[in-house]
Image (tube, rainbow, N blue to C red; front, side):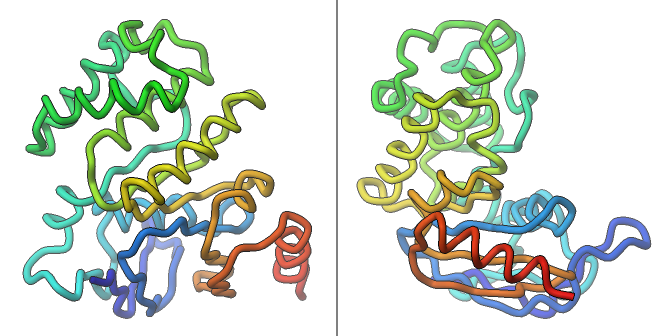
Length: 237
């Protein structure tokens, strides 16, 4: 099974973000890192994959599913946005999980069970019954990631997941992501500037530049190699 971008263009008003994107992403257990400076379209790419945005031109499709990609993405992807407003403020994490599961038509009981189980691995069990609005910035991020992962979708889309996390929480996140891939078989996309986190978990890098995929590297990279590759791409004239 593969997600296919066919001549995808995306504009915001008259401002173009992507030009004629043509590539395929196999849906197999892996962690894919979206890399590039601010403004190159990393978050837009995640939103296109999630079906939150539609292409201005061209189309996105699943090569084994007929019909709307948007409908497929609603059931098979979970998108965790950057920032602190990803969940409902006056609900706790368990309630948020059940709320968003019901919107997707996913079993709320399964999501609740997943949250309780995953919270142990993510060092979050003691915060499950705390209202989202009362959590610290780092714990809000953890809660949003936990809810997204607990949906049980094949594809998990994380936008700047390590923002706001302290060192211990960053280590929890890296272990959590690797467990999702290795134990649950998830396909995880990560948009991030955190080279340490990326080099620790990512198997496949997409470097975005000038509305295109500038570099496609299908192997792990040490942090120094990742930084060197980044500098080589984005300092070109």
